[in-house]
Each structure stands twice: as C-alpha cells, then as structure tokens.
Image 1 (cartoon, rainbow, N blue to C red):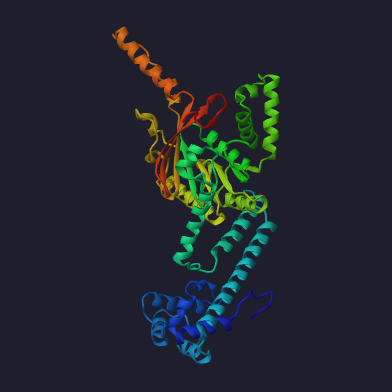
Image 2 (cartoon, helix red, strand yellow):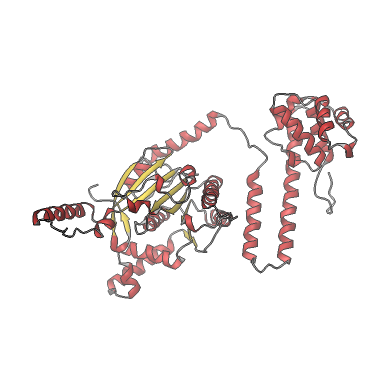
Length: 470
C-alpha cells in the first residue's frame, strides 16, 4: 500500500487479489457484493473489471476470463494494462482465496476509498477557505464541509449489512415491551397530550411527521406545546425556526405557559401578578433542554449539519422545523413540486440517519377556503404529493371557531324574522359547541389508524391542552 503523501492511499495489490479471486471463483461475489462498489477501486481499469463482473453476476452469469475478455474486446479499457491477457494474469498470479479473506480484502479497499474521499473533502475545503467568494461565507463553507463528511459517513460500505428477519422482529418487540411497561400506550416521545398520544402512539424514532394547516389554525402553537412537553419530560428538543426569531418563539412559549395574552405582554398592558408569572415561566424555560436555530433560508444539508451537532452536543431526541415552505432547495430548477420532493426526501433521510422523530410544519393550499366544509384533506398539502408520500404521519390542525367568527349570519333580503332567528340560533349553537376547541386530524399514519382528536384551545394564550371531560 502506498504511504506517499503525494499519492492518495491505495493498494493495487489488494485490488488485484480481489479481482483474481472473483475471476477464478465467481461465487465469491456473494462475499463482497454488499461491501464493495466499483468506485472503491483506485485503478479505473480495475473498477471497470469489477463493474463488468458484477453486471454478469447480477444477470446470473459467471464472470469468467473468457466472457470478460469478449466484453473488453468490444468496449476497450484494458489496453494500458496489457489487454485481455491481463485478466489471465490476475487469475494466475493470485492464489484462490477463501470467502472470509476476500471479504477482508474488500473491506480494506473500502477503507482506502474512505481515506481518499476524506483527503479530497479536506483539500476542497482548504482550497475554498483560501479563496474568496462574494456570494459565499465561511459559515456556508463549514456547513458544506460538515455535510460532505456526513454524507461520506452515511455512505457506509455499499448496500449495507443484511439483517435477519428475526433481528428486525426483535426491534419491534422491544418497542412493544417498552410501551407495555410504561402503560401509557406511547412508543417513543410523548406529545404531552394524552388524547393525541392515544391516537398516534407518540412520536416515534425515524418518523417524519407533517403538521399542516391554514394560517391562524395554531400549527406553531401545537408544535411549541409538544416541544415544551417533550423537553419537560427529559427529551431534549432541537427547534429550527425559519420564520420567527428565537426571541419571538420563546415569547410565544413563555406567554402560553404563563397564561398571559401575548399581545398584552407585547404592549406592556399586564399586571404585576402577570409579570411575575412571565418571569417564572421564563425561568422554567431556561432550565429546559431546548436549543433553537433561527437562521432563515436554510437548506436540508444545512439543517442536517446543525441537527447532527444538536444530537451530538445536546443529546437532542426530537427535531421540530417551522416550516417546510421556507426551506431552500439546494438546486432551484423552477419546478416547485420537484424541489419540495427533494426537500421531503431529505427530511425523511434526516429522521432515519439521526434516529429521531422530525416534526415539520407545513402550509395548506387555498383550496380549503373554497369548500363549505373547511376541514383539510391530504390533497390540500401544498406544492407536492411527495409530502404525503414521504411522511410517516400527516396531521392537520383545524379550528372551526376561526371560520364561525367570520361568518355571523346577517339578515337576507326578504327573509322572515323566524327564519333569520332560526339560522342565527343554529350558528350560535354551533359556536357554543366548538368555542375554545381545536381538532387534530390524523389523516395518514403508517403504523396506526386515522382519526380526529379534539383538544382545548386557549385562544388568548395560543395554547393547546387536553379537553376537560373529553
């Protein structure tokens, strides 16, 4: 193996040993196919040989010297190494290896590839750091560098280790056992709202949870309520606020917990008792494990880099992102649906890679407003069907009170007193039924039923809580 600092790490001898073993005994491909890819070879010709052998193996044909010789006679690529005779040399010069030995050699090649990639990432970062771009910054360079390192680590060694079905079943059994011992039906992190937990079973690791609604429905209020409850239960939360500043988010949480109307707090129209409650709520918030990133215009790689730091440094167990529509696409192509699809795919990957639930807020299209029944449906998700496809859970926040407040009946032309009074009484009765309540509509759930959960909603404090007697 070369240790010359001017030459990236490689081992042509190991590459030749693996290829020679595969050509002499094609069945050994079973031992390396989940470990080794063509790009792991430092020599391009060796990479071509392996790619051709792998293609034949996947088609059920042995990668013999004769078959590969015909292949390279057609496409070329071995001239620099001596042509088709080089294949015979590989077989003749390398003793037949056992499967375990071939797998070890393959793992060694992968390790050398990782080292070459690390060198390339560091060299690229160094080059950009010495340079200067008007449209770039050191922070962006750092995020790209960290994202590249994360991608390299996530790339692993190929198709990944195969797991027995029994091992996978044991994972499920452990989750069920944990829920059984807790006795609350929660798998993962509790939302702090028992009725919602009963419907969705809590926030599960690796799940992408979409919380959507029209403006003023209470999406952020519900998300911050869940974040507070999670942190209070000892599960650190990482909150990405792309719309509001960290101070605005904290202010909403503090006023909700102190039960002091935010608008009055902002105007200073509060009593000494309310001020004391705000201070107490702020002191409680300070002790909670919640960290906030309120930068605007983040991309998924930037969110992923920051989230990894949160998990590594703060032990974060839940990621909350407010909101999907403000996440920037890495590459803008003018097709919003394609951009959103790439973003949701990245967020689902984030949840799996970090093994935490990711709760993402999303807007709904205006189609809701055109219907008589304004309860949201999956088709109302804005910009892309990929949101529904990639999400493990889709929940909608709906407050009928919002619409009733704006639809107080007025007398119609020629309408009698009796009919008008009947319509007004029906409107008033419905207002009484839904006043200070909200609905969380679970429209999709991979591992559970759909349904609707009613919660109390304290409008002055923008706060959700359990519905008394519900």
